[in-house]
Length: 174
Image 1 (cartoon, rainbow, N blue to C red):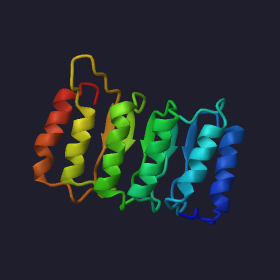
Image 2 (image 1 turned 120 degrees about the horizontal axis):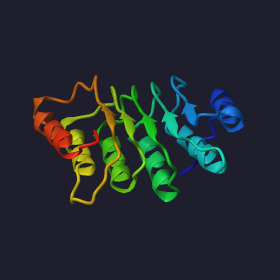
Image 3 (image 1 turned 90 degrees about the vertical axis):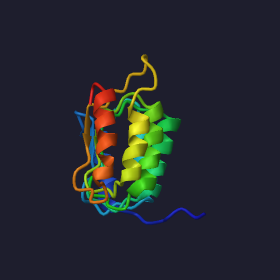
């Protein structure tokens, strides 16, 4: 498939600024009308400079879908970074498929301590998938996630109460 030739000058400017002067490791790309194709440029910049660590990636209030989340997760699994916070809130089309990709990340990534999923199309099935990746399977398993934000997901119903209870009971850091 052809890669998009769309150029987002505001995104390029933010990425250049991050590489030049960001001291705390935060890359905040909120409300920039980002689409899935922009993820290629973002991960390219994050992994380009090993001296500049990205500890917090905020992609809040954009137009990302499960495809963008898959691209992000695939890159994080291919070339791990010490990302602590991942904010995807307000990307209403991430949905259950995007949560499936994030669950893959949590099964292999031991660095993320905060995950913001407000208003992302999270469903009961997505909650079950998260529980499978966030709950220890044996006594030696350590899951560093301390904060999980899931508010404003209208497709989470009372069916997820047991799943939430399980996550809180079994994941002692959360």
